[in-house]
Image 1: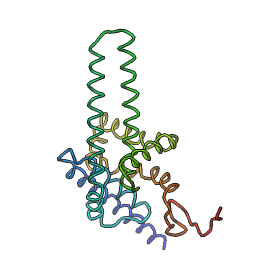
Image 2: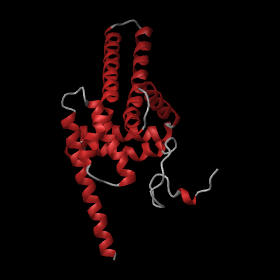
Image 3: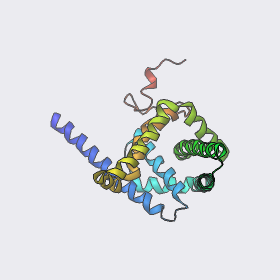
Length: 224
């Protein structure tokens, strides 16, 4: 029995590894037009969030279904983020080129603060689009509320995961190779544990049993 249990864990690990490689490939293929990166991110998060509760399934089918469903909202959000980011870069370079003393330094700090807030908002936005329903305004508001309301440890951890992956790939060749194979799919999967813990507080879903990784078994919980 012990050997069988070990084999099952190994097969689950092998299956998850394969799924992440496939997801990473699908993400880059659907992101090639660049304008579709937002929809690709939403689809990637959708599959990974689903796998936490229901296990791994036909990831390609799930991915393309989520890609189609989130395409309009996610694409509009991505375009908005790119335009806003471009304006911030222009503003930053503009004030860096000038020498207006305190005014220049102040404007540079403002640009950096806005860039950080925008980055944190973007990290939450596409998982929210993947998991929750609502108008674009409601989705954006939810993403900002969650980013701020669950800043520690959730926002800190999901941003830290992405930052560490980028830093490791930049300074280490082996890490770069791992990112090339698993890439953003692995980053998204690790982040999903933190995202879903927050979503579980706002989405009413029935637990899948006593081993439910998100909710536990509500049958054994006292109704408040």
